[in-house]
Length: 88
Image (spheres, one colour):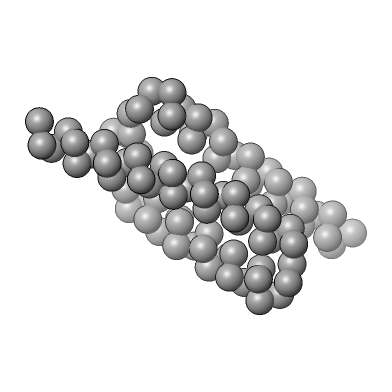
């Protein structure tokens, strides 16, 4: 039962980032996103991934790998778009 609850939680928190990443991809706009939030969030997700690896917990490892990828994509776009707008 614990693993089921963990798997559902991991799935939901991972899927929650898909619409934001898709919106950034489609619009190429990040002005309303907080750089600080995505820096801290990405670090936190990375730490969850390390924790999952240390515990050898597949749901934690899989979910946080996907979430980290999505978060780093958004963070990359945020930084690159902000820098390109400053140089205009």
